[in-house]
Image (cartoon, rainbow, N blue to C red; front, side, top):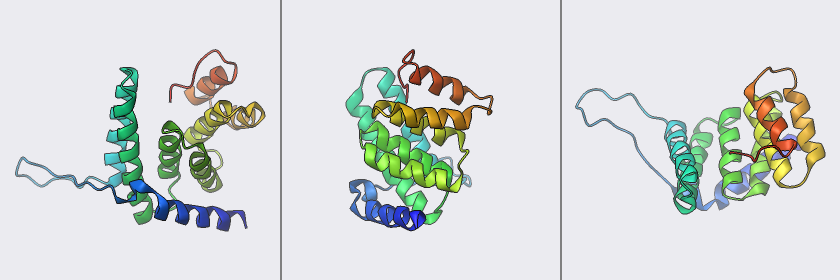
Length: 167
């Protein structure tokens, strides 16, 4: 039942999203055979650029790149649905533009597919901190407890208030 709800919400978000019409193509100008670039890879590049703009306090440019990334991720998700990594980035980019509701939907869908996904658990935990739901953030931290990964340490610091979410 919960799965159907997420699919219905995802369909609505896909149709209603203003970023849905964003496009792009990859190619090579060296005359040789170019390796195809996926929408996901283009989105990753947009996200990296957005993070660099954030570090330079160029918030408007960062927001534009996050929004462009959403368009590419949605296209990738249509072609390759049910990929937790894509859903993680969809959650991340929506969170970065302040759309916490859709961020949580995408993170939840990703966790439904892969409950132990390290990135989703960290980012969803950070979302819960930002939205003042520390109890839920601690639940995400508990999932990461045994991963022996930097994501556990990062989320723990964010929950303890010793570090702001860098993402």
